[in-house]
Length: 339
Length: 291
Image 1 (cartoon, rainbow over the protein chains, first blue to last red):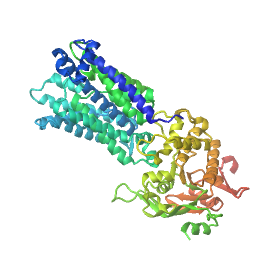
Image 2: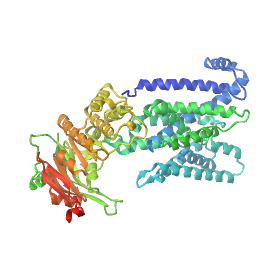
Image 3: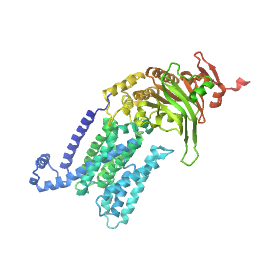
Image 4: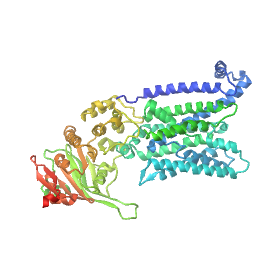
């Protein structure tokens, strides 16, 4: 018996954080204009000691104005999607749950688009609309997935997939009727894309929302471990199931909403990353949640670097990259009987 | 004098503690009704039920399907509150305890604990320490020791590092039981624990429960429809049918042929075994027997 210790959580997360730093350096280096690692280190060093005015202009433009914000956004989106995927998997006791598969991402996308149409003058309206859309969708899918008062795994997934396609159709309808919209931008956004930076005024809100959401879910990590064996069991072991469900549903919807309003509906990250983390580090949520956050960040940073470079100078939406990898793996997991 | 005493006396049973054992569970005129909504008529009711369980005692709740066994179990475990009457553990109403305190005092073992992701048996047993921890509940040295002891008590030391999925039915049942023991409860409820076990494992489980109850002062309640097992292992039997409590008392007093035949709707033979415990046999007529 080797129970999980706080020390092991720290070491694992430390290791993953180091890998993430490596990926960030790689992502800063690669692109239409390659930059050597030495230059990067020298220039990052200059920033670190407060001499950012000595930077060459093209570096400032490429590294600090283009690539770095995009990488930071990728970290945020990856962490948010993975943690919300891991949370939905525990609550719904379904290893294939993921904000994209469940339709929550599409709900958030429709919500933010509606909000943008109704009140475009407020910057905060997109994440707020996305949040409401995500909450409404997960509630709907939850009730669609019930059969005789029990959550049925197959019905739940079908309910999610059908909701997702319905909501995407609604988005298409909305977009087509709106005059003067850039259709390519919308398509990119539906697939999930990191090329549009978050407005400067919203950056802090996004960062705080991300940390608050992950933090709130992490306080329930021990409870989620027990919820995985079933609600009834969890109650008998002393878990306040109603409180845990409320905290986790709201926080996971918040995380999905943040990710979607910043980058659109990127799929499969919330499914694949927790799954890979489980295979490597085990399924204890006290480790799974922080490791998924870091793993999700790594996955998106790498996927976006690929999306920027494979067809350079043309860019792919990052959601296309994650779906190309994710959909076959999803089918594989489904065929293997979810184990 | 409580209702259970009255009913038990009337039928010749003697549930009163022979050696002044402490009273653990007191179920007094507890009833419950399920209904689809507040306005509609109840779809199932459990009539007033009374019995008591003392420390070191094993009580069987016996009855056919849909007799109200599970409802009574839920009332005892405190997840639902009785409509009338009371269910008290050591003088406190179980439904009024907060979930964590309740989990420190009552352990519930269900037929089968489903596991979504592969977990080590040892980690599974450690879950029983949850109600004693705070926040993220990383296991303390004490928790690990208690979990080890719990596994040892069910004869499962060697199972700690195996995943739940690869265990046999009997081994899995032991690990689930060990988790209940790790809760260090005063009352253990077993819900149809023998359902997926072969006869050897069934006897082993109940034998072990009786022994643990003696050693650790637990009161043990077993919900079952296995007449033979209840007769052999229970100190007291609570007989239910269609949501009504028919009899409470020692197996010898409750096991009457006409009564059991009527409750289980099957022709049966009941005889008294050597240790004063009743034996139940199926009486099946075959055509050649009649001719």
